[in-house]
Length: 277
Length: 267
Image (cartoon, rainbow over all chains, first blue to last red; front, side, top):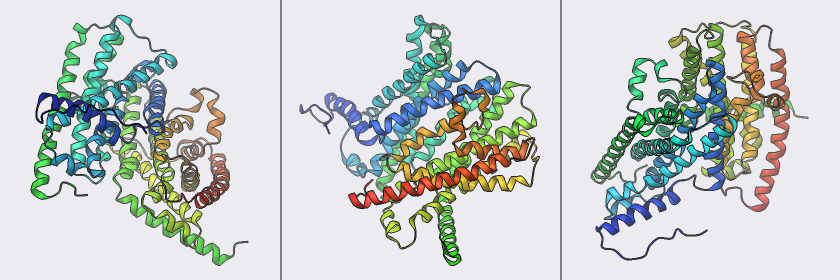
């Protein structure tokens, strides 16, 4: 097993360089150490195999039930599958510190919390994007989904932002999981709710009003709408608002996750529940 | 030949394990999610999709969808509970004790996987109740007397299929990853929500050897079918017997290999 190469150049604690190292190297190490699925024997069946069949299943189900083109369902699910990496991954990246017994050491370190926390996002955003990209390749090969080359960049941008917002809500779940008996319960629930609420399988206009209202504050809704429009040829100027909304929703969840994490840290010190199970 | 006393003793063992396992599932967040919450979400998606489709969302269609999504939940519970049954015993460090116990381990495993499937049938209750309460779905069966028989055949058949999953998945180091992989393909290949007639023809033979295909056919046949579902019930029983023979052979091989290699408790 090869070790992850990290820079050994010493840096002053609290300096920008030290924070960057915590952000970058810490993020990579946390991915390798805490993401249970980061090995081919789990990654391939879970993050490539399952999304393959999810896309095919909903394409068949949706077109049978509604008579609509399978493309609508294929695109929705190709974007949604990034939640497998983003939500489960970020939940594990935070909650597994507790389960693997490394949380006390982490909390005792003087490392900058924002750098520590923020660095964990990067691998999961990349991973989520790659899973979605794989989903779109499948759609292209098997379901005849065609892309507009001129707006492919816009589509990729919307996918990356969606992967970020998805990871952000995953980070919230990670924080919550620090206190729950079953850390992945909330993550599982969220992944299923996205299928229902965010326009993945059911057009938003067909949802009851209260579900439409909820969908507006969830990740995916705006990002997915932007991806759909970009595939149809919409430019950045036309879907920039949707992408920006998705981004700010992601930022809001990331900030909420950070404050939740720091609040749980303080309350754990007070109540001696840092490592409680 | 098994004596009557031995048969009673074996049934008692299966029954005790069944009760114990059900009690474990009742406090498991994961299995409550899989057996109750997830099927309700999928049922809602199916109901809303039919509504989007317009004219096709009749009473029979809603019942078709409720039974299909209920069976999807049963399959998920069987897949994760059965597929992970031996692996979980390993993680909990109880596998060695169970295998070393003087009672037959295959019956312990059967009790566990039957409990998994029985618990999975909460899905059916949940999706039917959801359909009635929120979508005004009528609850009636064309062959009400066949319904308990269909359910029994489905529970026993899927329970034994869970045993087959448990014994084969344990050969793969990450049984849960296999469970993650096989949820959607079986939903597709067994026609739980999309009729097999609309899928590629090569899926037909695959669906025939999958017990959930006949289980959902049997239950649907009793509820909304035009003739009594004797064939699917019979197929459930035949496939269950075949699965049991295979599962027992694989179990003997796995346990023997684990004992020889001293890897029984090594996950």
